[in-house]
Figure 1 (cartoon, helix red, strand yellow):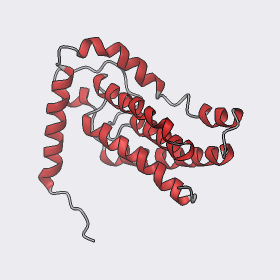
Figure 2 (tube, one colour):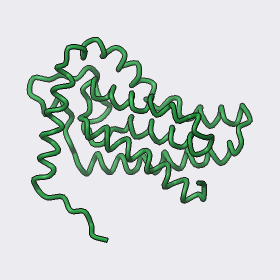
Figure 3 (tube, one colour):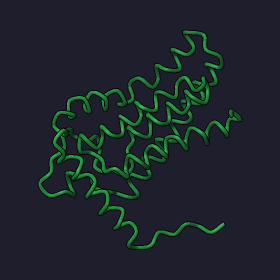
Figure 4 (cartoon, rainbow, N blue to C red):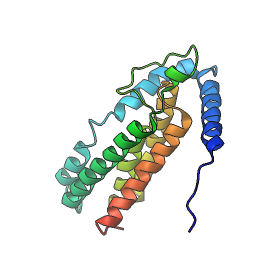
Length: 183
């Protein structure tokens, strides 16, 4: 199998698309009315609730709650390591540092934007819930997508940061479940 090689101009093309799409989103007529909602949605993915989900699974007697806790903890540890290496490796500047005259609506917790950790974590958790407890949790993918959209609306990520974050979280969940022998 041939490795996928990035042409030098390909990253520039992606960046140009990102900036163009970002500008269209933040300059839309409804953008201002979405900021408060985006702030609330983004806050739900700050990480404070993720440890509660395995505890609730155990409390309510869900099957395999102990295994779920182990997989959640391991998955988040791996995902966070990949996230940190990607942030430090790519060093992609946030929209407020790239788009002239633009100021984000919140202050990000770190300097770099690629990839969206909020989005990655949200997709990771929802994918684990679906794998462990079934498709009834699939509706939470709407929440995960809203988290990603909120990060763009708030001005701390470009669209590709969110897209890659969603793929990374989902991939981390499937990879770690396969590693644990859970299908």
